Amino acid sequence: MADIPETSDPQAESPNPDEKLVKIFDTEQESEAMVVSGLLESAGIQSDITSLVAPQDILPGVGGTVILVREEDAEDARTLIEEQRNAALDETTEIEAAGSTPPEV
Image 1 (cartoon, helix red, strand yellow):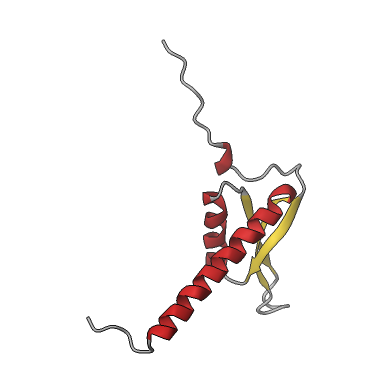
Image 2 (spheres, rainbow, N blue to C red):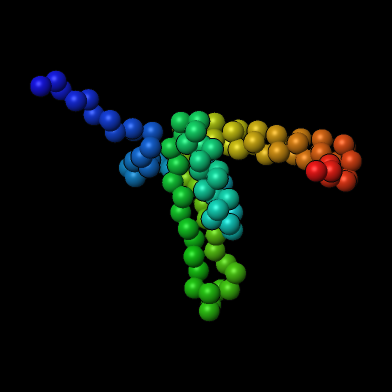
């Protein structure tokens, strides 16, 4: 019988907890953090999403979600997020410049 190669994708795993992790993104919306984490994953950057939840009876509205990456990936991750934000702003500006009324269907 032929040996079956291991199919485990190391890119799909969370960063090793023994490595130094740094916060590169925070938001109050977990869904936004998941989108950003997906963006990072598509670029081959492993990330870890951590929810910061405070007791709502003591600190209502306090909490959020942060994304952590390995220290050596932090600069690339921040650059990727910033490029994505700028691309979204450019698209919004183009739409606004084209006119404020949506096209007729």
